[in-house]
Image (tube, rainbow, N blue to C red):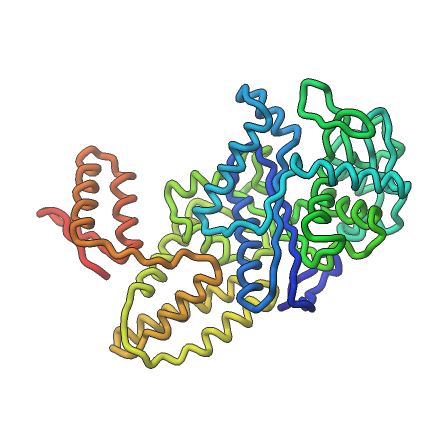
Length: 444
């Protein structure tokens, strides 16, 4: 398999059978939005396909559970920062489960790995790569001659990209915090430098080292994390251990934006929560919408995109429900799928292959030709991509009950609720036929 490496700017072949993968997770101060889903589904699919291809994968995806945003949310909700973190970690898992995302092998939290964070900072101070100042600790960017190799920024750009204003406790404006002094009334931990909490970047270096070792194979995250987060991860990890590279391959997914907007984020006020989307669309439809674009490209969410994906997945489900005899040579579809996925996780071409297969299943079925192998392969390919392929066949009584509920919603003029029942039945291969005499149905 070849993956595009953001560090070298070229596709590189995975050269070993055991893959250690670290993925930057979310800061848990609110429900996940579709931008979070895009990234999480991408690395879930990468993990799944690597395993399908015979690789032994260990994936670590962290939670940032101590942060200014979490503290501010705790004040807003009048609960502790820990309660905020627990609330939204639960929300993250709930929403990702609905999208068919498998849990990572380890989901570490910053608050649970404080010992390792403090030890890593101490190593950087011992190596003269960091310094303490007035209760905080900063990384000295001048220590490393190759700082900026991932983002390829010069010093002026590094200063512009710094997340916080210059601090008089720093030696240089571009130095970044490893440990931040905290007031006693906010979450804090004891350290050799006084009470405080870790900076954003150091937690990922510490957790990657603890759970995967000093060198990892794949590091993933959103394109917006290249600078400063991933750039700082590299320099602090390599400066602490003296081992290069920290990660062999850096994989970054493109960002999601609404039509006419910049990237989607909570801070910009233009995000679309996964939970909101799930009110109207299936997890399979959302996953299909994500995978129809290449992970490295920016994705735009408009009013029609999820609706189109929902209807497209209904075509797949109808093909899954078909039964027939053997006699379908499916080798070309499997080969095309694997070739697409091996070329930098080419899910758009892989999805196109799935729809080609669906088309041929339908054509062969209309001619009473063998389709069994095609339907079986369709299910296998969908499973590799993480779709839920369990086809639920309703009994006639269940269908009639749903029709009665739909009719009652229509009488009450609750048309949105009535449409949801119609769409649910259509997903299951059942078409409602309305007439002046009432509603009936047929299985399609």
